[in-house]
Amino acid sequence: MVETEGLTKFYGKRRGLEDLSLEIRAGEVFGYLGPNGAGKTTTIRLLLDVIRPTRGRLRVLGADPRDPGVRGRIGYLPGELALEGRDKAGDYLRFLAGVRGGVAKGRVEQLAERLEADLSVRMGKLSKGNKQKVGLIQAFMHEPELLILDEPTSGLDPLVQQEFLSMVREARTAGRTVLMSSHVLAEVEHVSDRVGIVRSGRLVAVENVAALREKAVRLVELHFDAPVPEDAFRDLPGVRDLKVEGANVRCTIDGRPDALIKAAARFTVVHMVSAEPDLEEIFLTYYSEEGRHAHAGA
Amino acid sequence: MPTLVLKTLREYRRSLIGWTVGICAFAGMYTSFFPQIRANADLYSQAALSKYPDSVRTLLGGLENITSGAGFMQSIIYQLFVPLLFTMCAVALGAKAIAEPEESKTLELTLTLPLDRKRLVLERFAALVVGLLGVAVVSLLVVALVGASVDIGVPFGRILAAHSMVFLLVLFFGTLSLTAGAATGRKAAALGVAGVYAVAGYVVNALAPNVEVMSWLNRLSPFYYYSEGRPLITGFPIGDALVLLAATAVLVMTAVLSFDRRDVGV
Image (cartoon, rainbow over all chains, first blue to last red; front, side, top):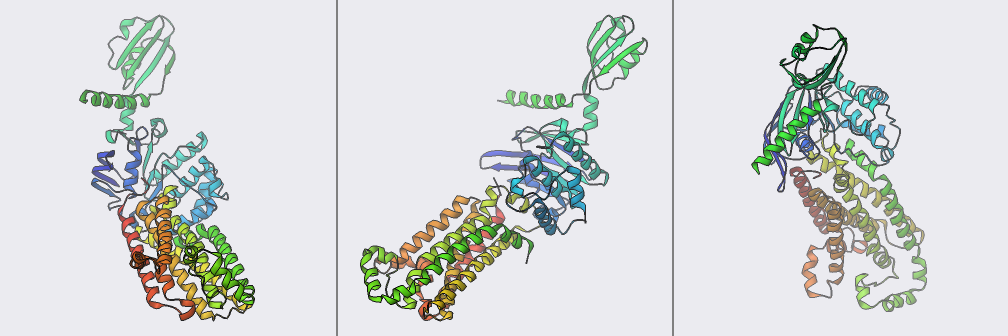
């Protein structure tokens, strides 16, 4: 759906993006992550032909995004969405729908209802969150093959964020492809199949979310009905930072909890606490590793 | 009409109405003063000649024959004030075509529509033409009707010719503003380039009869082609009109080509 090779963008001497080679497959949800200013928006604007690459090759839906026909098959939410003027949001959506060759009847109203957006307000008077809703409606309304969403959850309250995520899931179920950027993994991890991490204009890693979760370090606490010997838990594969205090065992596990569970099964487990794996932490290790490399190189 | 042209006209609506009202009020009011001047012909032609120092009179186009209908219209309506106001209107609208929405970031979404960039510029230009034509037609009718009501004695065909030249003049400046905006994406550049060129062009044209160097520079001034043919007296000057149109066409091509190849919104 999206293919880039050595994609590079310099703004004068300032590096926006360097040597990005990325493939986004049909039907997947791809989370594009990185801190602000890392090159996420640059990538996305290159994909939509708002800006032109300094070097490199890109194909979107099998064609050059300069081809207007290709852009008609994309739903795009800009990172800095600006809606102004005295036009009502509904009129603006009608205009966009008209240029894109029409939208199924009732579709806009249905999306507006889901996101609780009021389309009878003049655009200049919309709050930030409501602008974002209008932005999402216009991106989803023509049921495009490819959705490119730059920071889609910014400005949305948690309930609307949930609704948005279920819209993304539905799009995937319907076989559409989604590229969404964020600076927080937590926002995209539950819907993304893969995440790419970009930092200082370079792609640092592309990871399968399921694999990432498997690699995740999680903290586990077990409470038994009687004190347990430390030996029973020592040197289990994947178990680290073991602490046995009487009837309580605390450790972190790396990957699967299988060995720990089997070891614990020999005793009577009263209570067990397992924190959700903190993907954010893994995500941050990528950053710090990259930081170390940069440091070593300097 | 193409969707983007309509949408653009909707964006222009309020400022178009404002400028139309302003230009019409000015042109109508001044045209209605004609009977007073005609009634006191000696007084006013003397006053006009003596009231202003020579240099100012030169800038106002000489102020000759202001007691005849055509002379009055030429000096009061078509020499400075109507072209000036209308040029300001055109330059402001031209800046709204690309530069202003680019600076405010509203252009980005429009750009990602399935519309060719060349077509985007052309449709914005088309909206500018239609909008300015609207202002021109309404103000033409006001001048002609008020003129007829005070027996100004200039045939409608001649007023139409003069007004057509105003339209072509301001279309040039509006397009210049559009083009500077399309090439740079900066509103200040759009307004600045068109504004400076208009003022310089006017001054050069006004001083040309008296200052040697200005007379060849004057060939670069749109005001030269605007005023040289004296449309109120001799009718529509086709040659001059074609020069203005050709210059506008070159600007539109420049706008299309430069916008098509650059990054937007950086």
